[in-house]
Image (cartoon, rainbow, N blue to C red; front, side, top):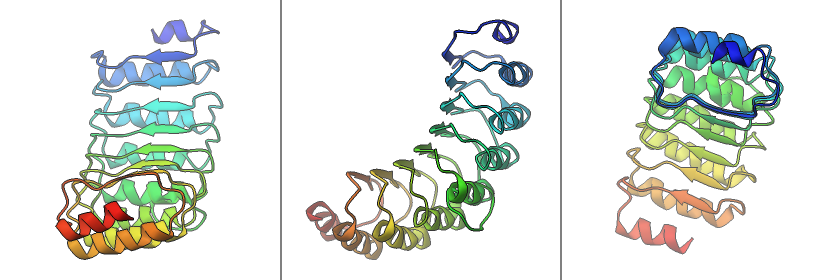
Length: 240
């Protein structure tokens, strides 16, 4: 397949999900994409690519001007690949959809991506979100981001003006992230879909989020399932 990409000049969508080719094939595919300028949608979910392939793809994203959607869901990527991908977002100007669901990313990658979404400092994912101006959809659900990354991502939302869909479900974000998200929702004017379910948020955070929703004019879909919000907070949120 990677050899064919050197010659094909019309292919726009490439789906290789659930094909067990693993790391070496992933690196070969990344190399082929360095000279292919037609593929726009690339789905490599559930291929066990591991870090070397992830880093190779990150390097390609630094210069690629055609790929708009990249799905790396369920690939056993850790922070080594995650931070490389975050750093590539500083340079990439075309990617709009990035799916990193169900990998092995932690707070280091989370903070790096957050920085890429604004224009200040932070760590690798947080850093990317501060400076990137094209990404609209980011799925980081079911990783191990933790509190510090969650807070950095929330702070990035105060400055980022392009992201419309963000999924942070199942990441043990905790109360500090919930409070930071309250401030983000008061300032952000572009995010329309936010998922922070199953993140150990409490009743006080739920109440504060409800108050923030009264000020926010952009959010249309907000998922908070499987938190400890309480019945009254749930009603307040639904009323907001």
